[in-house]
Amino acid sequence: MRILSAKEKGFTLVELVTVIVILGVLAVSTTSFIQFGTKSYTDAVDREEITTTARFVIERLNREVRNSLPNSVRVVNGSGKKCLEFIPIAQSAIYLDIPVLPEPASNTITLVPFTSALVDNSSSVAVYALNANDIYDNNNGVIHGFDSLSPLLNRNELNDSSPAVVLTLATPANPIHFRADSPTSRIYFIEPAVAYCLENDELYRYKNYANSAVDNTPIRSNNGVENNWSLMAENLGNTVLPFNVVDVTLRRNALVLIQLHFFINLENIIFSHEIQVPNVP
Image (cartoon, rainbow, N blue to C red; front, side, top):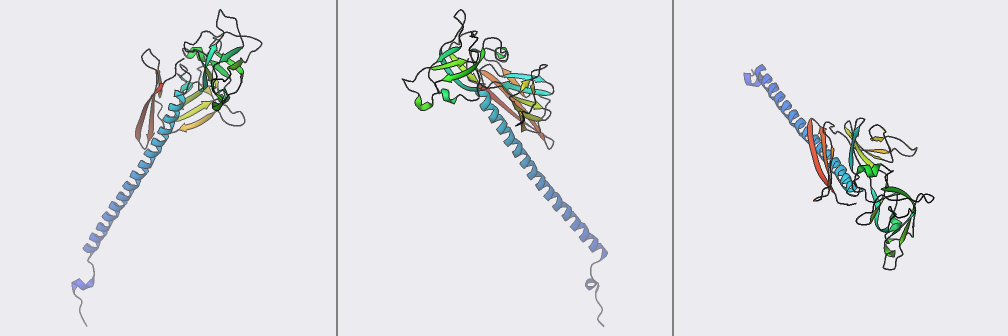
């Protein structure tokens, strides 16, 4: 019978333990590498999602604020909300004359021909609003409701022979005065106010809302068809004021400063943006 040598009998205990230890180290290293790669990928996806959300919100704000009524942008805080509020413009036109004291009151205004058929979602007009109080206080002769426009002209109908457009105010039985003439004879057709509000860690857009009598912040409601608020962004920090308005001066337009702090995966990503409001009253 053949006698097996020590090498032919198999692994020794020391060799077996060594192999197990090596395999364990390799397994831990491989698992750690996979976990690190997976975490890096998920973090990158989360950052990309936040970047996309921030770009969407800032671009939406940029377009809406730049198309707002001059001097209507204001910051409103209270009831756990930090809000940027403004009045959107539906259209603008040039008037020939408006009733201003000591002229007699009137319920009609004659306008230079413009694309009057494109005036949608507007029921009010504004002339020469100088500050937020002029705009959000409806009893100061700056904003008045209107009833109709005639004729309704499209872009292809505008020419040298186009008739003047007559605007009829919403109070035909009670002729009115505007407080003052616009230096540029400009009249704005305006829509209901819009507000972007930071609440806790979420950003909402409000429309068709009533203001709180306590702090003027928007009140949530549902008209039976849709909510008056829309979620725009999540994972925001609320320790820093997200909106700031720098009033217009003789040398520059009004500025809206936006600073959004996003928190995700223990990271703080800050997006800052500056919006110029180019319109003049």
